[in-house]
Image 1 (cartoon, rainbow, N blue to C red):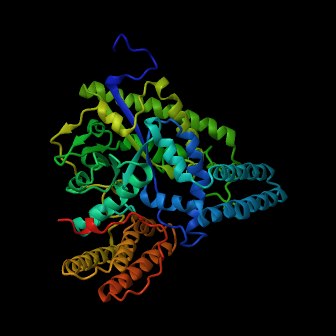
Image 2 (image 1 turned 120 degrees about the vertical axis):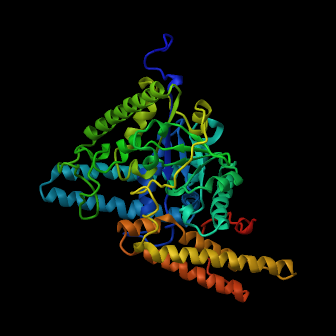
Image 3 (image 1 turned 90 degrees about the horizontal axis):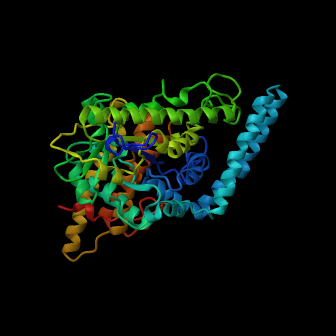
Length: 505
């Protein structure tokens, strides 16, 4: 041990922990309400995104806000925000009152009291949203301004599984549309890029380099082995961008559905619900005790830090070099799926230094940890299993085929339009742009994920089929060059769309 090291202080030679919060929502604004549709967004706003603003103030973490999520956050200063407030006031407030009364009349007085307590979450969200004037996107912009808060990640426009796209132009369209939207909203092109579903295939780094991305996360668990020291070693690709392996042995402390922190009996049971889907019970079946669960979440935060410190120190001893411990989590886990998750996160942020863990955003962590050269990367995802089968299997073949066919037909139509414009004709831009937006919507990874996991009845198939139909109609209008006006349909999806990347050589 270095004699000058003070106990409780980070050991710079041990490396750093990079917490990466991946915030994402498919485009549901205007597409249904209950049980599937806009209420997904409204619940995430109330239980995750609004509370997160306070939790992440000044935090040295990496925050991903996918372009398609931001497309929807941008609408909240208008009618979408009014619908959100109506949801809080006309749906959530009265059902808490009604279910509390029903539980009390049934003799479950403690559960009734818990329902009334939980109603305060939605009242707090109402106040916070009103205080922001609905401008949640602006609040995130301010949170990251000046370099004193979270570092923001870029991503593909609609969270497409990039290795499954049919053409290089299609990949460029997804990547560039997402990066252009990020640049307009946050004032700079992102240096770090989130591969949707951590889905990687050799060659993607070339397209990322063209877009200016300097780093991305990748899951190499199957290739390297769970807990391997190489998981803490960034890899410089031949194209330039640095691939940062995620450490699933660390992620699993939170994420594992059988042994992760959220399954503890004291935490609120996400699946045990009242008549109106409220949750007054814990995982053990007892009435939920909020104070006790928060205390446990804080202790689990400390346990997480102790394990991270040991993981980093073990790597330093074994490899004689600092490591980068990358732990990405879906932001929506923290507050929605795992109700106490933001208490856990706040503890990690507040006590990292005291536990000897240096917590840094990805770019700063990379400045401390030199990437290795010449190490190959295996095709992968962070799915279960860690391949592309969640998004490419017989069960979702209809979605995969429709998206690939639509992409190829769009490329062909755009090529014909460009040739016509070069010959003096006018390219039918409105119809092609509508077709491109429908393709981006169809390519969302969420539809196949939800269908594979059977999580949302027929909603994902209904949405995907509708986008496929509209894509065909828009392509037909482009070919006919009819000049017919198209239904706007997709509202604010991919507002920075530019078709030129689709045809770049």
